[in-house]
Length: 276
Image (cartoon, rainbow, N blue to C red; front, side, top):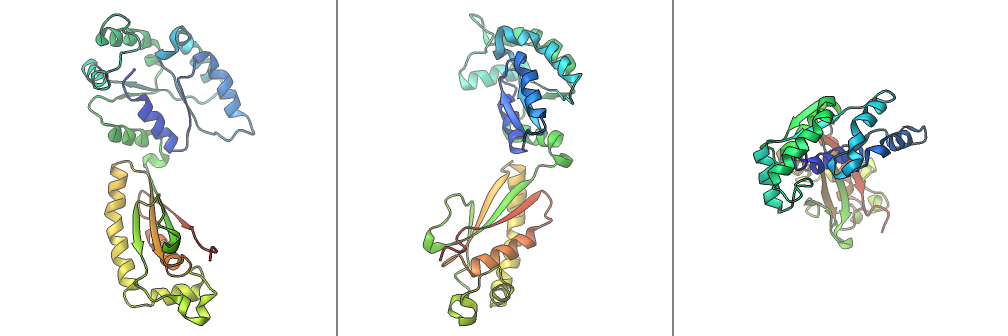
C-alpha cells in the first residue's frame, strides 16, 4: 500500500546487502531477474519494489510474478496499514495519494486496496506497519531478512593521526596521546602498531590497559543502543600524533576485544599508516 513504508523497507534491504530496484514496471520484471541470475552477475539478492505508481503497467503484475515463481525463488512481502494510519501519514507529508484523483485521500486508499487484492493473495509475508516508526519497521525487516534474523552494527575501528586531521566520518573519537610515544624509543621508531614489539610497549604503559578495559565496557551499551535505533554503520576513530604507533596498536587491541559481541561486526582500518 502507498504510504505503508516501501521506501523504508527498500532502504533496510539495501543496508542488508540487497540490490534494490524501486518502482519497476511489472513488464520489466523478467528481464531484470534474468540479468541478476546470470552467472556473471554480482547481485545474488534482488529486491524489487512494485506498486500502483506503474499505472496501467501494474495490471499485469500478478501474471508476471506467477511466471517468475515458475523459474526462480521468489518471496513476496506485502506492506499494509490501517486506513486511518495511511491518511495520517499522507496528511503529514502533504502529498496526494497516487490514486485519489479529484477525490479524497481515503478514496485513493480504498481504490488501491481493491486493486491490490490479487497481489496480496500471493504474498508470503503480510506486514502491517500501523503504529510502527521507521526504526521499528527496519527492525521488522531485519527479523525477516537478515542472516539469522538479527541485524548487525558494522563498527569500523579507525586509527588516525591528529596532525593529519580528525576523520570527518567518525561517530566516536578516542585520543591516545596520553600514552608515551614509541617514536621517541629508537628501536621502535621504524616499527608501527601492527608489530608486536610496538603493541606490547603501548599496552604495557601505565593507564593503557585500564583505558582499554573501561572503554570497551563503555562501548558495549552504545553499540547495543545503535542496534536498537538501527544505526547499522559506525566509525570509532582512535588517534595519536602521527597515526603510526599508539593509535594503531590500540585500534587493533580494542577491535579484538569487541570481536564476538552479539549484533556487532568489527572491521579495522589504519587511515594514516605509511603516510609519514
